[in-house]
Image (cartoon, rainbow, N blue to C red; front, side, top):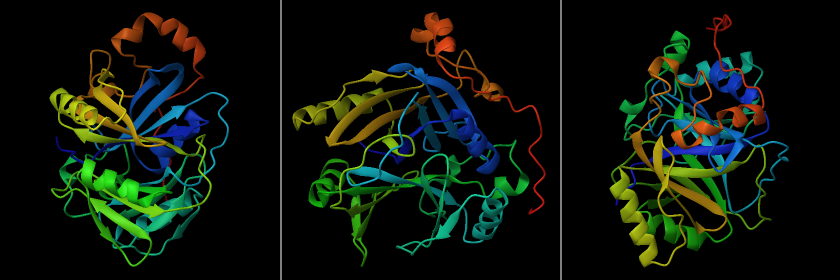
Length: 325
């Protein structure tokens, strides 16, 4: 029963096409799967990651129709971190974000130095230096991105949370999930896994303001990496022994999952590393190019294609010349 870091983070958008354009052209990430929310099949579920869709590199989005703008507040996952290799990458990213007219501002340091920037069409994100103790080998930059982008490629982690009951969440992270907390002079505590893990850092801050409300621009849930189905079953038995609510095993085809709200209303997911996004519909070179569906939804393909909004994920033209490089 070990968590091996982050698996993915899922946010909510109101425009999947703008998301695709931003994450591919600006951030240089690869769309590795264009599918649908398996619990709401008229909603896209898009996965942006490294070249292979390695677990722990995915930022994913639900494109809910007619969704209202979310309201940030307490008891939410507030921000997604994106790590970059070194402090020298700051200069590259400052130039790149300016080139694409993306607003950003440098933030106050906490344990690690970082600067934050606001992604206008998605969620609040942050670029921070690569953490040496994490498994950087999982990072495989997308070959279709620019040479300097491959050198400075961002990858998922850490995660930022604001909660109203700091003691309850501390107990969950420390006693249930196995994180170790290190408190800074500020009101924020850094939680890491004792043995490391890909993107396995959570920054927790107490916030007594009004609760947030999910909508576009907010984060839906965070998923942690576990090894396989047996690990999921162990977590199920553990949560059941503690009488904590959970979904039971959920087969998502691309991975197997377990969901729980052990701290309401934040949704935690536990997801297996495999089998992954390369399947009988898409090989590695074709990832993200078509609407991919798990076998159970394929008989509904015509209905699904008529209900989702158009989303062009074909990259037929070279990326625009970047004079700032």
